[in-house]
Amino acid sequence: MTTGFVDTSWSKAGTSKSFQFGDGTNSRVFDYINGQPMLNNLNLQLIKNGPIGGKVELSFGQDADIIASWPTANFNSFDVTAAYVSGTMGPLTLQVGKYATLAGAEVLESPSDLNFSRSILFGYAIPFTHTGARLTWAATSALSVIAGINNGWDNTKGNGSGAHTGEGGLAYTNKNLSLSTQGYSGTEQTAYGYHNSIIDVNGIPNNWSGVLGHRSVIDAVGSYKFGPVITGILNYDDGRMTNVTTVNGAGTPNGFGVATWNGLAGYISAALTGKLTLTGRYEQFNDPQGFRTTYAQRWNEGTLTFAYAPSSSLLFRAEVRADHSSVMPWLDGNNLPINHMSSLGLEAIAKF
Image 1 (cartoon, rainbow, N blue to C red):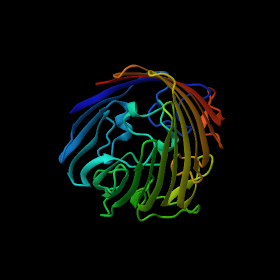
Image 2: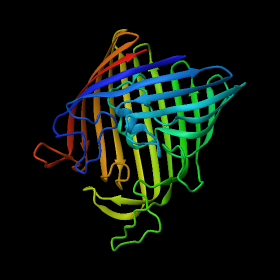
Image 3: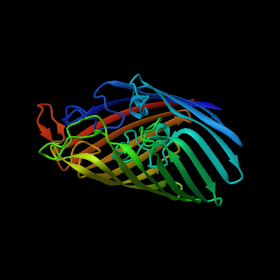
Image 4: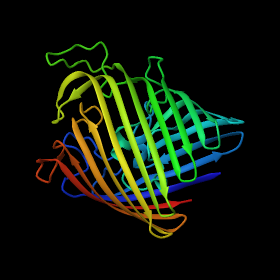
């Protein structure tokens, strides 16, 4: 089976001059270009189901530069997003290759998400993909148990140490309720990696050649259908990483040690008609050492998305969003620090 989609968009920042923080880091996951049309993703998927199957998924466009795995990431607007073979025998299914993470309430394929912009949790709390082996046991018709061993977070070849990241998960689904919890734990290279570091007077390594730390995250997602119209979703994440540089609220390095992060996101989606859906999202993300976002901050956002699907192959979205931080990571039009950002987003998706 061959399928795919084309995702295009236009986004405009309001109170801030762009979607970047003051240090140049993107504060949006994918919709990071201000006031210009974007080809987010030309997505192609080849899927084979059955006892022996697999999937190859290719992404072209700006999204590909964000989700590309190390060390293949070269910012040429192309990514092999998935490439795995699978085998099923009775209740057991084994996948070997590259596949999407178990974590998160949102997914890489935008037509399956409820909002246009991705959540803070999707961009900063969890990985996108893994390369390794994953075994799923369908214990009952409603309950699945998942275990795997991977090269890490968004890593195709590993970190060079030979150490791996383990994954485990439980997923339960009945008519109206879906619950899942998953965890990842293993050795990862730090975002600002060091090796044989020399510590300066502030306790910060100043040799930028790479070091490894231990990274873990626990993710939980629950969704419930309140009848045929209303659906509610909750997503919680809690993560930890050792051997990292920590920063303060101004983004200035202030130490070397352990970083933690956590967040909670809630969604309410209403199918107003067969073609029109209204979705609200609110979330808060805590990054007290600034490891994930480059600022030590509490960051929250509220989003309202109108989606119109005139046919099964077309989807249009209009969205308003407001972000707020406990510090001042954005810049206004006069390059002065501010603690809030408003934005408007428009999106058009064609599925085939």
